[in-house]
Amino acid sequence: MRRLALLALLLLAPAAQAADPSAQPDVAPVTVRREIGDAVLLRSWYTAWNGRMRTLLIAYPRTAASVPLLVTNHPAGMSMVCTDERSLAAARAGYALACVSGQGTATRAFSYGSAGQIADLARAPQVVQDRMPDVRVDPSRVFLVGSSMGGTEALLVALRYPQAYDRVIALDPITDLGRRWASLPLNRRPLLEAECGGTPAQQPLCYAVRSPLALVPTATALPRQLQLWYSPSDPVVGEPRQAPAFIAALAARRLPGGFVVRTGTWGHGSPWNRDLYAAALGLHPTG
Image (cartoon, rainbow, N blue to C red; front, side, top):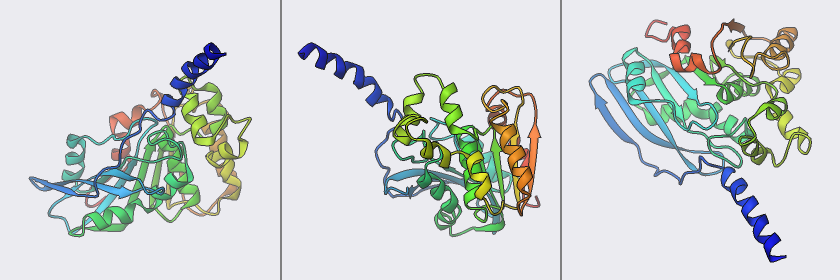
């Protein structure tokens, strides 16, 4: 019996550890400001939906009176995607770039569309504005972009909070989370299961409310422009019941707002790494 108990503990230990490999302690509620030429870098914080203090990185042009704002939401497991170099380039191009570290229900960087995470993303523009009172965010040019899991969350923001952003860009988004669970590597499934408290068969409602495809029938509007980028050859989102199914369902609704689809032959997540989204947005002072 003792051997069986020990064996059970050994088997459960890796699963418990895998529940949140991205776990981090709260950051201090302090903003550190650095001026580098005409750019300002802020390492700041925000209070997530569950009270945790999470990192918020912001870069913006020091001399501008009003700027467009681009909020970024990372792929699964990546707590930050903004390097100093990328952030400074954004500020020098004339816009503010804000990176939100994220907070799911049971994990931090594997939030997979947690309702609290989506609400945090929807209010992020106001949080950013509060952190840079010397510069005004242009309310007509507030953008959200995310890739993979971040793309899924961008779609959820667009469907649930269509007024939160002027433009939303979802790169390679998963639109059916339950179906994605079945194709995830075995070591990644526990992270998604931790968020929903079980498998899709055990917790179908949780997977449905985190799936953009399932929310299309109840959506009432879209942002001024919603962009969905995907590669039909991408086995993650190109299969018929992921991006194509979402595109067809949303097109059939004819919701107020704009919807643009961009396709290509890139690998999963490649547009994020190449910064193509920034070029597509035309984010510069007169864009």
